[in-house]
Length: 331
Image (cartoon, rainbow, N blue to C red; front, side, top):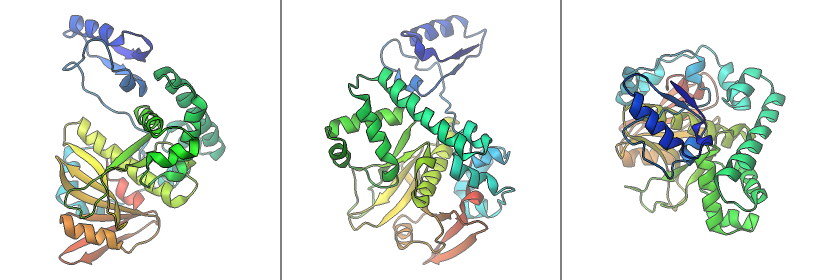
């Protein structure tokens, strides 16, 4: 039994609960819908214990290469990430290059045309901001919300204080905070918190923002970092949905402006450091430093193709490898 876009109905949770409780022995249920199923969670009876969420993501390199997801691959990834990545030899580089220009959303990706992407992206922003946000909130001036979203591509990959955006659009920081939460809930953006444990003089408040439609980012360096953030977030989300762990993605930054782009944790323990550099093969000094602090494996992922190099870092080592090679091995 399939239900699609139940959020259109005011009391959809009550309706679904009644159908499930009456027919649970006779049917399996698949509830499909946009991100608004997450938005419309308030009110009505709880569905706790009656469902398991599975998130559907844009296309990934792993899918395009037709690789199978297994628990063994997950365990190998954390047991020895260097060996797991070293054995992967992607069959097609052009898939990653196409994703850089067109994103992994199916319609623009399979068109293979930048013009199609531009039309799709404009419609994507129009529909989600001027329709979904308008319907899901009591925002009075949707033009200001749209103006804030248009400013975000230039701020990807950097800590994002509310005050700066508030001054640019001439609204209160509280409004910016509420609107950014709406963007996240509707899968326009996602944000990473800083990790502060064992980090001297760490930043503890400002989150870094990334976009699902990252091809709107003009500079290739931040666009590439956004792609890496999305691939890692998606992989951890899939593993969590399947019950393989309790993983989250953070970033590291201290008041001396030493930063590592990503830290993967599992059950609140650091497991892997990842730095995204468009073309620089030599590991950054910050990556070396934080690897010594956390004593975990560290990767530097770059856009340049056909790279797989190991650099010594005291008693540890850091692997530099091409993005298409790295993400061909993630689920």
